[in-house]
Image (cartoon, rainbow, N blue to C red; front, side, top):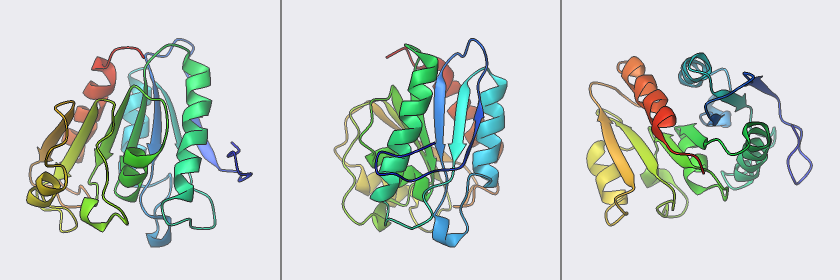
Length: 193
């Protein structure tokens, strides 16, 4: 897959013949070992593919772009998936650093999902997306505990829903099954674009 600014990205695509939706998965911070093979991303990839979605997980560009250039990577991924699913819903889902990318990329999607978004660590305040958005906030996340997520999203519109993942930390060590189930249900329930 190629980005608009000429970067080639590696990725994996599950593409059923008649998909229920399209999903793009953004992984954690690449400078901290994040990749498309992250266990949270892999669990989502398998679960969403298992319910009949076209799912793309990809690695961000090799040269770190501070979260700004990675938005172009997400845009290229959404374009690829949208081209495969036609009028079906397209969802942009990110975990940790990938959650910030998913919340801020300038893309035409049905919805966005941010898992363990480190909102206080964003270089600029994150503005509420215009699409339906699900924030999954781990109960014991040291980077963005529920009280910080609530503070960062104060005043965001009602189409942004926050769900606390009970017992989970930033790595979603406990609560992974619940988080995956929540994302899968969300992707299934969103109407077409």
